[in-house]
Length: 62
Image 1 (cartoon, rainbow, N blue to C red):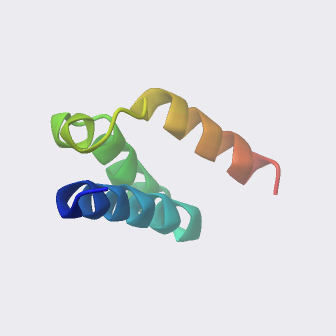
Image 2: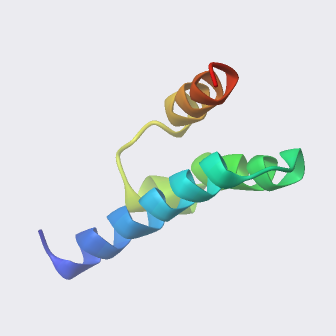
């Protein structure tokens, strides 16, 4: 994996960790906007909408 790909993966993983740790809905909303952004699509091939749905489902089952 090249360094740019590693950096992109680290950014996405940090956002997922931040989302999981967020206590306030406005913080989660901000991270969700990132998951739907053009920049997110440049960083990864992950489907941002599916990622949000998975994270919401995970949060709701806790």
